[in-house]
Image 1 (cartoon, rainbow, N blue to C red):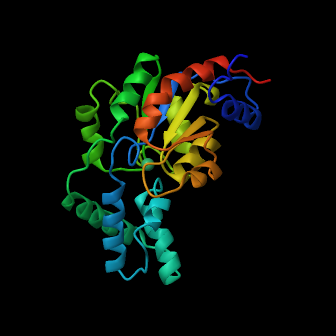
Image 2: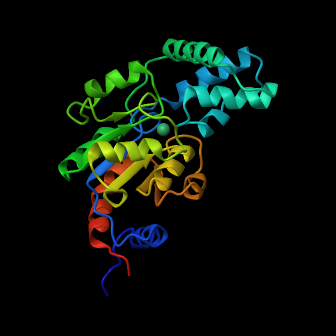
Length: 252
Ligand code: MG
């Protein structure tokens, strides 16, 4: 008996749901925080410190769920919940700036273990790499080329400054596809956060969820991930097989 092709049921389900004949990956649209960098612990700590200071009752873990939103959107949402009103533009700007300062005070963020292996596999398989992040923080974006040399082109980045709508809106990933000159069936999205996964799936791309924090895999599946991996090293190890399976499987 011929063993089944790995990931065949996940890929078949994706093709069915999106009405694609097949996926031919030409570009990978890759999230930054919690995907390329092990930065979410620091982000949630900075957010929790900031919001507690301004009198918003919140837990640190809830900020994992908001990951991918722009800073302004997170501030606004919490203001509505805590104070029953939207944040002013000035409040959004001042508070996001302070959050950035608190983030900078924390120990330096390190690249996610396995991320460089993942990028190397993508490059060797001939896929373009496009960074798609809800962050506008210059400090991390500038580090990308130092930590992942040759993996990203400077003009092929989508940040909070390049879009009108942040994740979970699909605009950031659609913008990424435009930069890569690919259609949804030629793109894969690599994400760690529920809102990012939702944005990826809504953009039509084959969206891969990777759990790198406290969010359980079921949440990423419910958000629309075509396939979920338990860690970045696990994903990096299985990526060559997944890419081959994507090229092999067509809609039944
Ligand atoms: Mg992320």
